[in-house]
Image 1 (tube, rainbow, N blue to C red):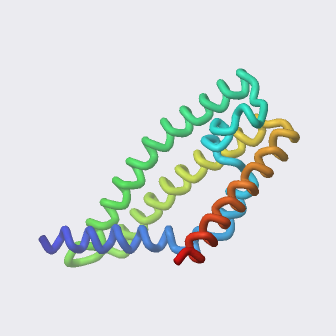
Image 2: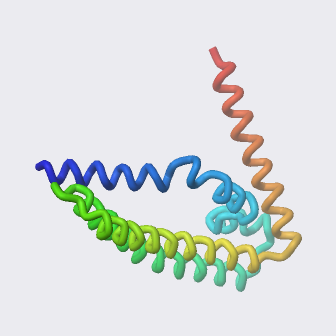
Length: 156
């Protein structure tokens, strides 16, 4: 039971470290603004005038990224569990723990790289006019969300 608690603590600590605003905000937010998510493109494919070839390529990009991401997500989980075991031991070996943390961070970096590659391939697939159009759609969606929030807050 004690080991499980330590594993849970270690996994939570690692998760909080890498998902903290200081760690993840900034670059990730900028990337989201620069590259439209594939699901949004597919949802608005008619408005964007995506060709059959573009749709097909976009679906393949997403499939490839999902397959690679799934394997890497399992790898991240396995490495995090190993780190949790090391940290949760009665006697912590700092060297082994840091080496395991390196493995975990390498797996997380590989996962982020797959996602970035998908985003870049997605952007390259679109014409400049389609990129402008998706920016307009995104701005309209933001505005609609803001309007809904404002209405909810003002409702009695």
